Length: 392
Ligand code: CTP
Image (cartoon, rainbow, N blue to C red; front, top):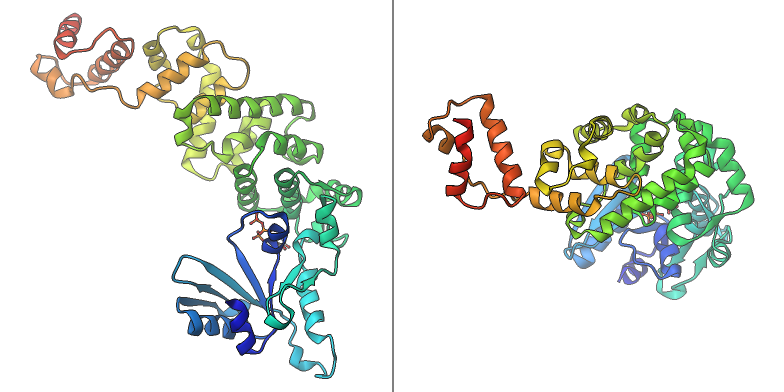
């Protein structure tokens, strides 16, 4: 359909970047990027005229996003060279402007374009041999300054390596190592954005290990000799998570993986720079406290864990019980499952009616009641009232 609009708008239009790569890899991708050899904004308006939907214009960039009524959206960019400045007789004028757009990109496999105009539909523009790198499963930068210009590309390279089972070629890998020190120049925010994407992808343990090889963690103060430990911790975290459906209602946060290398270096505080939310900070605090409080790991009843763990998040508990083989894993998981719906057998109101004085003690009593309920010792209100006698 874009094809028809391209024809009557009379401009060359290409599908470009990640979506072309994923078409060849036969992987789903909903980010449709197209490049127009002309005005991207005009073309988005053409799409709207032909198929409805709405257009959002990003004037400063000369780009636009067309939202189709059925959720689909397409980003439209202009190939940025003003080709009307060039002699009209130049035969490959369009191709060369497109090449410049492609040349600004990160890797050969992301630097291909597919023509959408009906007369040459499906023609591949592949000046950097991306298709051959796709076949040989290789991540390769377009030029030697790529990682210097943008160190986040190193993280992107690792992400594509693990996601597709590809590898950087020798040259790219050595450029990555040489530029890694520049990672520290980036804002925490930019690194966090990349980390979120990395740890949302498949295989976080592999990602962690690969980032050790490339000296990423070491830039930020993690020790070099804890690669395997970190890898194992992350793998266990995935395993425990997979084994226990309860955890699956909440995806493991990127931050939980991110903290592992710092934790094993005994330097969790160094992850603080990247703790951008209250949740992240609470997580750091929790895993520190869990490491410090004594004795809880040996506790036995489901309810008894409650005394120690009630204020800790599921995430922190999952992190902690995955750090090494944990004998009580099943009991703790069953505690975590149950604690979210402990039946409220008595309320504060009931305690007052029983003649107890409101105050700090209430919290204590209700907590002990939860412990007894979790342990299966108290099931009814009568039993609870009887149990309450000892507090009177
Ligand atoms: N790009 C780049 N350098 C970056 C980020 C992006 O050159 N630092 C280019 C790549 O060509 C990429 C395109 O911009 O294909 C779109 O970027 P993005 O949507 O982030 O990546 P995708 O390749 O689509 O990856 P994903 O599938 O993870 O979204």
